[in-house]
Image (tube, rainbow, N blue to C red; front, side, top):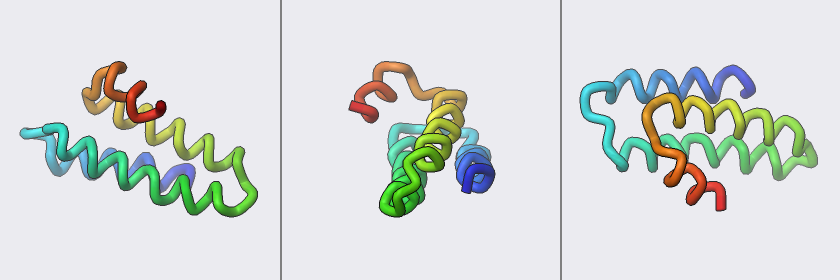
Length: 74
């Protein structure tokens, strides 16, 4: 999952490269939250944090502003 989630998010943003709107970022956040939640449900917080950080940076590099990312984290 540490490799698959960032690759999946990069693939998703590549498919929607021409018209990335807030909807695509919401779907990407959902694609990130589901595996992180399942990993965190197991008592493996370290892996969940690593997967979350990797997905977070993919979403950031796709063009989402810091303000919206901070709002999602809070």
